[in-house]
Amino acid sequence: MAETNFLTYKGKPLVRKDNIIFYGDMAEPFVVKFEILSSKKNGKLEIADKVKVQLLKSDTQLAEDKRIVKETTKDTLFDALDFGFIWLERALKENK
Image (cartoon, one colour):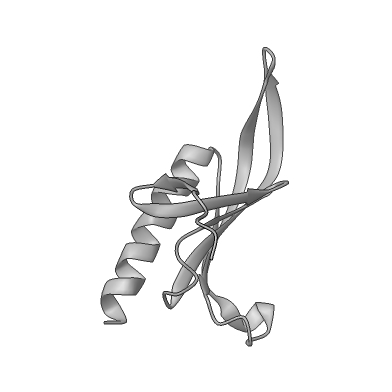
């Protein structure tokens, strides 16, 4: 099996495709999904200014709407990552 190196945040993988970022390990019971809803230009950079955060059950056999445990919208990617990290850590601890 080929080794894949993912970008990580606080020890868990971050995987991005277009405007969607997944945080966490799919082998664990929960992951976090970040959807960048809008962004603005800051010089030459695009900065996310509206990000939907969803704590999801990682069971892909469930319908998408049945996987959502918690959901919120944040004004910065940093705030979204902070919320997602806390939600994921708490959910994983409660599930042990």
